Image (cartoon, rainbow, N blue to C red; front, side, top):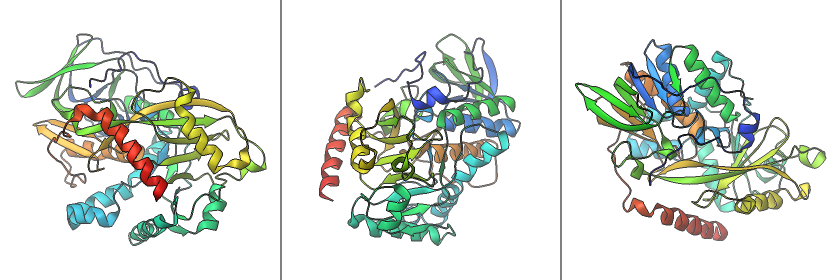
Length: 430
């Protein structure tokens, strides 16, 4: 499946309607030479460019549409400093040294996000009140409490919550308990992405929207990146950071992940006692179901609900009914609510639920596969990628692995559909 986003407008999302203005990122008009060329204007690419520029390295980002067009500008806005795997799992998978390095990087990933926001004055409605992960059944409670305890051993002030405390914090009796990760928070993700672009530009990086990369070749010890409009970029190093919108620029890369749709709805601004009881502390939230739901409030009082959807792009309100039904079931006190926005974006799901970093050739690096945890993970990834490219003595915390395509990847529509059906059944019997 070839994904081409060149020239496409931003989805009609809440974020597109309320974001800070985008900085000028005109299409590349002339061939250039740079130190690092970056394909993909999302969190990974822009964070890498910003950190490179701060280190005095010439970096050029090209984006097929406009920065933030993909998942970076369409996600739920939750800044969660965790992976799908718990700390003990990471040590078992990677060993104590490599696992510990990755745990440390993830532990500080939200700090990277909020540190950039403060340092560069990014206007993106940052809130850092924590993330509530709540259990949809009593069977899930021991696992959540064990997760909290693992982070507590790493000096995170995680809180274990019983049913009553979750009900007070979330505003529903639907959950059996949970835990609070105090490191987490939320942002307006498109404003944050645009703020990263603006900061990168101010530090000397180049950022060009509406510039589609069409081919990548190694020539005379450098990389030559051809664009659809004609100009080429000559670079010592290249980063491919296209995540859920990866195409065929490098052989087999797009076959290493499944591009799954994440759907979101946003209500009209809510008021009254019933609404004020929902997430009164401004935490973000998600549940433990395999087909998870994630939710938060925005600064105007809207309730946002997100979750997985079918593979095809949505074509009407009927495709979001499962999320609107979830709002009704979780928060019946609201009665009938109106929805102002419905939208979707693609997340990259990997087989091992780990972010993937590949270095298949000298001077070429690829980073993708954030499994729904992109704001914190991808932004921190950019910091560490920049350090690796500039020869930092600090160890690179993410595993570097060979490109391993998912077998029969051409059937990914069937994979996603079958997974949704299977996980839905497991959630019902859990």
